[in-house]
Length: 88
Image 1 (tube, rainbow, N blue to C red):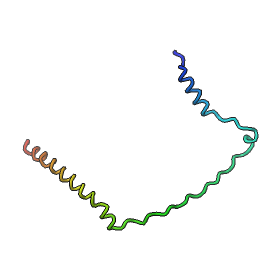
Image 2 (image 1 turned 180 degrees about the vertical axis):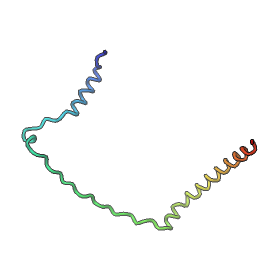
Image 3 (image 1 turned 90 degrees about the vertical axis):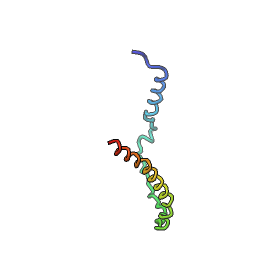
Image 4 (image 1 turned 30 degrees about the vertical axis):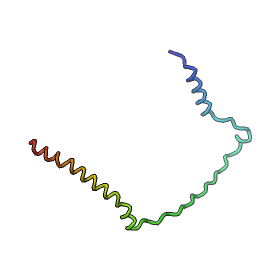
């Protein structure tokens, strides 16, 4: 079996060093962990809901796009359906 390459040895050493526990001093080892205080989340101001007029104005450009897509789909599908009927 081949030996480990130098590169993989170095990578393994770095990984092992990163996960190894840090040595604690005598004063740190005897002390219990300090409780961490968590502050409550601050609520952000919400935007007021959109009115019906705003929703209609916002959707105007999508209506025209949907119409274009449907017309294009119709142009493609109608000849295909007619061709299927004629082939039978």
